[in-house]
Each structure stands twice: as structure tokens, then as C-alpha cells.
Amino acid sequence: MARDHAARRPVPPGRNAWLAAAIFLAVQGTGAQKVRVEDELEAYPTESVDLRCEFIDGGGRTKLTQVSWIWEPVDGQRDNIAVYHPMYGQSFPNGLFKDRVVFLHNNLENPSIRISELKMSDAGRYTCEYATYPSGNEQGTTSLVMLAKPKNSANAVTVQAGPQSVVVAQCEAADGKPAATIKWTSSLGGNHTTSTTNGPDGTVTVRSEYRLVPTPADNGREVTCTVEQRTHQRPWVSSVKLSVEYPPSVSIEGYDNNWYVGRSDVVLVCKVDGNPPPTDVTWTAVSGALPDTVVVSGNKLTVRKVDDAVNTTFICGVKNMRGASQHQITTYVIEALKDPSSAGVVAGAVIGSLLALLLVVALVAVLMSRNRRRQRRGYPGGGDSVAAAGGGGGSNGGDYGNKARLLFSGTGNKNGTGTNNNGPVYTYREGCDATGTLTEKPNDYHHHHHHLHHASMGNAPSAHDILLSGEMDEVDRRKFDLDDSMEEDYDRFGAVGGGGDMQPPAYRVHRGLRGEEDMVVYLDDDMESQRDGSVISRTAIYV
Image (cartoon, rainbow, N blue to C red; front, top):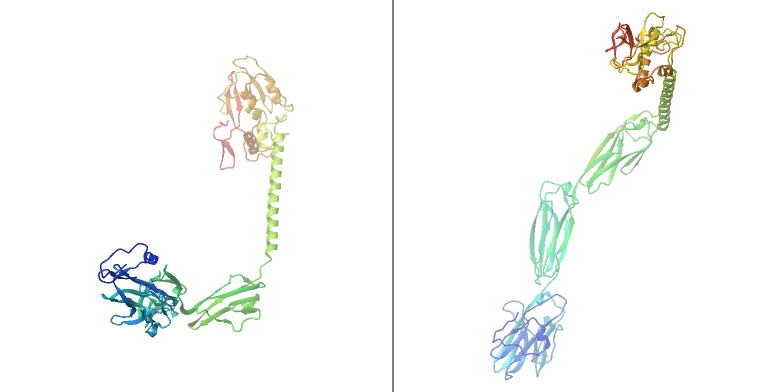
């Protein structure tokens, strides 16, 4: 910015290159006479600053007699610090600037000066004043602003936990100019106060204090101080960890309720929390002196070998400058355990033996079942009867006789409702002999009559013989192959004479084509247990 206490005129082109680059210019004078200076300058202590001044005479009729620099530290105080006269030369009358002020050019038209080794007290207004003829004095004033970078610091204030709000952190920006601004950032919910102090050299010190009601949980937590000031390119930030002192708290860890006789190197640890950290940790036992097998090292208690002597209560005591505390734990010694590895081997052996035994039993059962199936593939020998099969008599020990084999007669299903149009129909008739007779009934379609008879000691016809005796449909031929359900029925009624209370297969009355009562036998799988222990079919007709 520029000051102009006279008529403003454009600066002549090409006149002194430094005039074109400067941020000034203040012009002071009357008519065509002008004094050009910079409006304001900033400087730091120990640095140097150039105060520029130039007299511009548009008409060339003004005679310059002398030029002086006058310093005004405060309003109403004026001190000459530099004078130049073309005949008498340079003069520096103020001792405060002795050897620190020089003229940059030895002429009246450009009497700029340089002040070195600046001090904060050098701040003020500097006036370049000309003595001219015939117009009198002409002048221009520059304000010199001394800046000071503050010395920033932040620190915690050690406090004791308590119910009162106290200062826990401080932040300061000392000896700065202009005054700094301090802010706090925290999640603790405290508050702050700020104060300023002016120094003799014009600097300002700003102090801010952060307050809260301290608790043990606040120890080590952070608050942040931020300082902003004109000389800072970016804000200054510092985090502070709070220091809250409180009495110690203690706990004992390491006991697992498994201290058995003979166990070695078990450890108890005394966990301590306090500020300042407790340095005095002691171990004692309720029973008196510590057992011989116990070794103490700081906050650790080690039992080299567990025995009945450590069946006691251990106490850990701690203290710091704010108080003392202790904690105790009772240890119980139990009987020595067996070697876990041996127990595992024994258990593994037992389990393995049981599995092997189950495997052998299963294998034997499978083999016996397969053997039984092979024995039951054909017809039973002569002399067998239904009664023998049920009661265990007969030479073959329980296979079904002719009655049982009538299962494979020409019935279409177990209820006897089907027909056999192509082959002979076999029925059972009483009276021929002890074993009965298998008689072929006439077929509606094939009027052939065959009488199959065998003596009590004879052999029953084989399945192959029956298949060859006439044409049978596919369903009847399949009946000669025993399936698993038939074999299960056979097992229920007993094999090798073991019938017991089990009843033989049920049979029903079938009216033959000749009006005879034929007994057609079939096996049923919907058997029902009776209260007397017998098993009967729910659908068969017993006669």
C-alpha cells in the first residue's frame, strides 16, 4: 500500500528498477515534490532490514539541503538515527543504533538506510524527512513491524487422582509477536483457561492450562495442544500424555487348580497396577515362612516341586508413594495323578480290543448266516412234515415238508387269489401217509392229471423236477428262489429242530376243481406275537 499526502502522479518509466518491484510507495509532499517510501515492513530479531527512500522532483526546481531518518518507537517520541548532508557528510546521533545503521547510497536523491542486528525494541515508525528550498520539509514514513516466533511447549502436570478439578496439562507460546492463539483437543471432557503476559521488548507470552477431575483411568491418556501464530506457516501441534498418580492395585495369576504332588515348576505372578509403578513387592504365606521348595524373584513365586508344604495361602503385597495393597490366593495340593501317557495307552488298548471283538462277532455272524442260506437252497428230505418243522421232529431237523413247499403252488399272491393258467397246481391232501401227498389238480386250460406221490422215506421232488413237470409262468418260476424275507421267516420258525414256541407257517383251505378240500400253504410276513409267547399271522386262516 502507498501513502500519498500530495498530488499522485505516475512513476516515470525506467526510473530505478527497485521502484518497480517494491510493494511501497508512499508519496509525501506538495505540488510536484514527492518522497517515496514503503508503507510497512516485517522483520525478525537478529536479521537486517532496508528502509528505502527517494525524492522525486518532477520540475527539477527544488533544492535539497539535507535528509534525516527519524525513529518513533511510540507516539510523541521522535529520535534522529541517521543524517546526511552533502557538505558535512553522514551522522548517527542515536546511540541505540550506533554501528547498526548505514546509508546505502551516498547522495540526497536516494538516502536509503540498512539496520542490522535487529531487536524487538527496534519496532516503530521510521520517517525519511527532507529539508528543501524553497518548499520546506518533505517526508515519508515506513512502519517497521518486528515479528517474533514464539517458543512453543506443552507438558503434563503430574497430579494425584481425586475428586477435585486440577490442572493436568499446560501449553505455552512464549515471547512471540504478535500474540499466539492456543487451542486444546481432547475426548476427556475437561476445560481450559488462557492468559497473556507482555514482555518489555514488545513480545507476548500466551499460557493455557487444561483442567479435569483426574481418575486412575486418565493416566496415560492424551490431550492435544495447537498453537497458531502469524510467523507459523502451519499450526504447531503437540500431544501430551497425562500423568495421574494413584495407589497400587494387585492380583495373583497362575494358579490352575491342578497342583498335584510331584508337579514341578509352577509359578504364581503378582500383577500390579499403580502410578508410580510399585517397586516394593513382597511374598508371604499365612502358614508362616515360605516353604523350602518356593523361590521368589520380584513379582514371581516359583514352586520347584509341589508337596503338602505348599497347601497354604500365599499373599502378595505391594506399595508405592501413594499407598499399599495386597492380594492372597489359597492353593490346594491334590494326590499325584497317574502317568497320563500310560493311561492313554491302556485306554487305547481297551478300545482296540473291544473293536476287534466286535469285528470277530460280526464276521462269525455273517459266515453263519451265509452257511444257513446255502443249506436252505433245496427241498427237505423225505419224512418231513409241517408238524415236524414246527416241533423239531424229522430226520432233517426242521426243514418244512410238503405243506411248507406248497408256498410255491400256483397261487398268484399270498392270499391265494391268483391263478396259474399254464402249469399244474399242487395241493396237500391228508391220508396217504404221514407226510401227505402232493396232488396235481386239473388245469382249466390243460386237462392233464398227474399224481405225485412219495413214500415216507422217499425223496421230495426237486425244484428242477417241478419246473419240468409243466409249463409255469414267470411269476411261479421266481417263487422257487428264496428271497431274504422268506429266509427271515425260516429263521423265526427255527432251524435244525429248534422250533420252540414258534408256530409253523399258516395254511388255508382251498377248494380244488374236484370239490376236495386242499390245503394251500403260504408264508406271511405280518406276524403277530401272542401273550403265551407264540407268533401267528394276522391274515392266515388256521384249521
